[in-house]
Figure 1 (cartoon, rainbow, N blue to C red):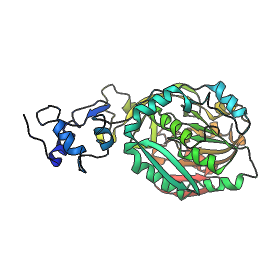
Figure 2: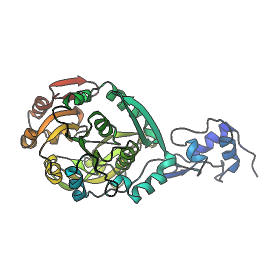
Figure 3: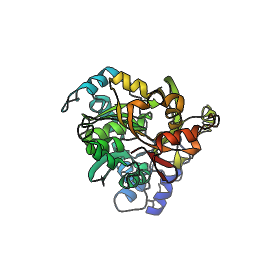
Figure 4: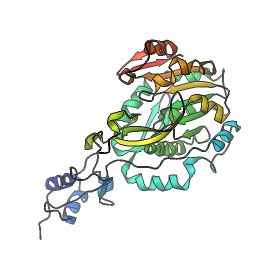
Amino acid sequence: MYAASSIQTCKTHVKLCWPDSSGVLLRCYFHPFGRKSPACRESCCDKPSSCFDSIYTRKECCSTGFARLFPTADAVEVDWEDGSRWAASEAGYDPTGAHPSFSSTQRAWEASISNASIRMSQEVLGHHLEFMAFKRSGPALGKVLEELSEDLYRLGHVELLKNQAPSAVAVDVGASIGLVSVLLCKLWAGARVVAMEPAPPNFRYLLWNLRINHVTDCVWPLNVAAGASPSPERHFFYSPTYPTWSQYCQEDCQDDDDSWRGGYTDWQLRFSAPVVSLAEVVWALGFNRIDFLKVDCEGCEWEIFAPHAWERLRHRIRYVATELHQWALPTDAERGLEASVRGFVCRHEVVRENFLCSTM
């Protein structure tokens, strides 16, 4: 038999299984010799302690005894027919029967991830936002909320557009877990917002957040990536620590040996998703125009706004807000691409880590 461990020793035991597991769920409590330790669990859970961190949380370890390293989810197939009915509907349309936020698979996913999720809330541009997120993403999302509160995307100008386009159409490319989509609905009553997000775990949180903010009638979500031209499949990777960061895989993340992964503190997930063009979205949903386009997709903006693609669609888009990532500018990009894109979308510009541009 072994003696009950101290709180500090338990913390060490908690971390013993950290570097040795590559699974989704990690066992929280171990004895130094590999046996599960109920005494360690009691020492940690029965009193305030320092046993827990952003991965091994009290909520998980004191309920199931397992901690989730990263979120997993299946992709959600796009139902373009239901989407077109939503797009054509009148204000007050009840999408409960068709909207993926209300599906049984979505509810089951929420139940499976609830212990590993956090609930956050904040006032942004005069509106209250509530949202669920993976437990490790709080600091990164806090930074996003700061940027939204500073109105770096100039979303506050959406209020000024109400009288011009009361039944407006907005497209949120790189919607992540839905912060901008929800905010657009609150800023622009009566709008239709199409939220495009390729990462399945992000997309599941997006569905959850649309429902808890009561904006399912306003937002139609698409589990797809955006690009200049359609493709049935493209590979991506992202970090659950930074859910707003998701980008195309290059050759170095196609390896079967998983050498493309980051460390355990910034675990990167690889996934595949279909790519659609904005022209496809406009056509498939039956829209004649896009009144407001927001693009934050960690590199796909160079495809969307490339002259050969943008010239075909720009006459149908009134206003744009985007983040330009110079580090993601393709190495084989045609000469003058950056200058052309900046000329299209950077009427107003804020320089932070990247360039936040808008035409409003």
